[in-house]
Figure 1 (cartoon, one colour):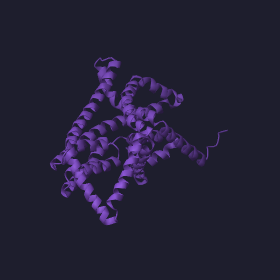
Figure 2: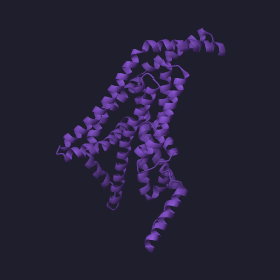
Figure 3: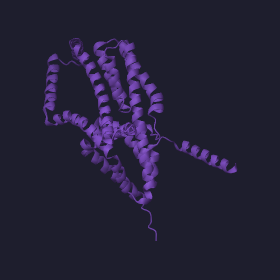
Figure 4: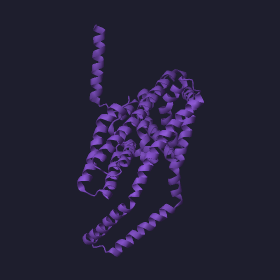
Length: 368
């Protein structure tokens, strides 16, 4: 006798429990999971380069080492370029300090005039805030905040090398986890995930390069100082979906305000970043970054916020590829298909139209 299917409330409760356990595991183990996840993205991105080197006759170990070394050199070159721009930025520190002092005095006079707060009260408030800030920086947790990213940067190349080296073993492990009858579907899901991640990462690199060029050119036209620095940093921040663009615009306006307080220049900077965002969202993302799986904007924004709450900036960056992989899995598991619909960007009207066109095409083929 066939067992009756589990009631909906039980399946829904188990799904929520599983989501809660996964989120708790990510939050508690982010120092381990985040570097592994970033290394996984890098491994998938570098896999074609490794395969190309092996076709040329390079041994596997040497091919993996060269691929990882190439990625490290590219990242180091970008870091050196940003450091050079920051060095130029530091040369202007006396001028920036003078402008900040002028702004500080004007702000103090405005606060005293508008809110009747004396200069002595303002000085006491700033002194208390400075004391609390120094205490926070001297706290033991600060060492982890500073050394955490450095440790991650060191671990990512090591993890990437090992994931590439043990790629076949890891794939075999994933396949044998499931019953033999599910082997074809598991291989299909793994191939789809690999294709999505590769297209996403390659597209992301191209998009970041184009955005950096557009930002820098626009700021150079406005004769903004540190145009290259602001353009590259804005492109890197743009890797965080939705939120990164807003943060980049605010940062560029603040830095520009220090050296170019003219309102027309500030409005020009905002206009450049808005124009680049329009080009990015309407042309670069659909045609360069667009992958085989489409995710709706609501889920993307919520996913980015959840990723940030669980693992900071790295969690924000990883949220979109994680959601894309979940959708691939949900679409191919019968009990999870409704969740795949929730993550997708296809409305019921579009789904019905697609189904109608599919039925008509099949009907025409039969009549022919």
